[in-house]
Amino acid sequence: MACKFIVFSIGLALALGIVHETGHAGEWGKYQVEDRRSGYTYRTKETRAMQDDDFQNPGMALVDEGEALWSMVDGKAGKSCASCHQDASVTMRGVGAVYPKFDIGLGKLKNIEQQINTCRTGQMQATPWKWEKGQLLAMTVYVRHQSRGMPMNVKVDGSAAPFFEKGKAFYNERRGQLDMSCGSCHEAYPGTRIRADMLSQGQGHSFPTYRLKWQKVGSLHRRFRGCNKQVRSKPYKYGSDEYVNLELYAGWRARGLPIETPALRN
Amino acid sequence: MANFKARIKVPKKAKKGEVFQVKTLVTHKMETGLRKNKKTGKKIPRFIINKFACNYNGKEVFSSNWHPAISANPYMSFYVRAEKSGSLDFSWTDDKGQVGTKSAKIMVTG
Image 1 (cartoon, rainbow over the protein chains, first blue to last red):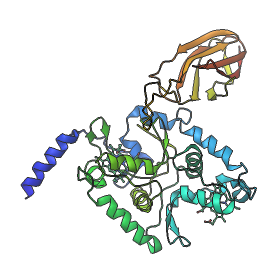
Image 2: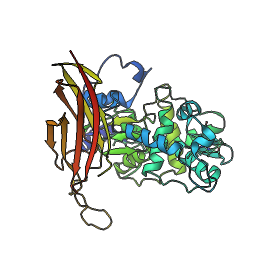
Image 3: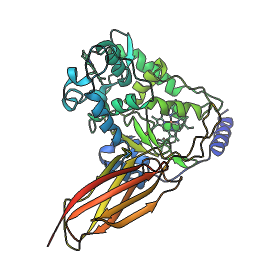
Image 4: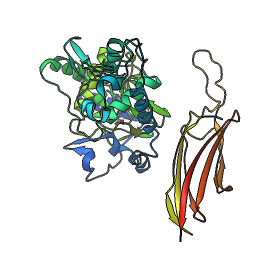
């Protein structure tokens, strides 16, 4: 049985083109906490340099866009985000570190995108912004950016516990034609090449992220969809309960790591 | 005139003869013309910025022609030698002939 599994694993490794590569040894400074290393540390030095320089990071344009939207009046109530939340650098500081979090009214988790739209529909009487479109991405980047550098610190006990468990189960469940779990890549092989890419630990603290492949900023749920599709499993919807629960687990996997939004990845 | 969202970084002051770095980044999707709309199967027409230039007190000191393989949101950085106080004027021209501009002042001492 064990022998059969090894043969299967090698076959799989060959099929996916996994090749071992010596990882960077030593210190990653703030980008490493215990054995948790940010996706940043698995990128090339050229990609890291783009993130290190706010000027070069095209994701920073969304911080500017989000800032402009923050004080834009919209909806029947005649309000902007700033009408209630004033200065985002004060009121939104730390928010990005604790989402997704349990919402008593909903009886389940909500993430930042959902909170923003709740404020738009409920508080502003405006239409909700569409997932993965410019405005919602820009505002999510803007809100999350206010916590840049702060350690990820999602709550996984109490009311959040059952949802955390669901997210964890999703992470560890094999799926798709390739029959792989998230952990088959991100726990078994971080620091290892998979085709032309290098696997990270698959954490959620850097999102929304500017991805060179996408040529734009994308949400964590877009990343989840991509990771589902590449093992040929059907992706879930943006904002689905499955992905919000998974977001909590991916956030917990990054606990203590500084928020990088908008990070830059290849 | 097109209203391109661009960022530029130029030092406020430089010594005469000093070589300084200029950084620019323009937000643009740089549609290659090679992609298809997945639903209709129709080609998405090419729409890129095809020329970037920088003039220093009216004289061109840097220019480049861009092609479809240039990434979205192009970043361009280069070096200029300080001569006289004045302005650096940047321009980005797209496929429709629209031009976006941005300028920065520099003070040259000594």
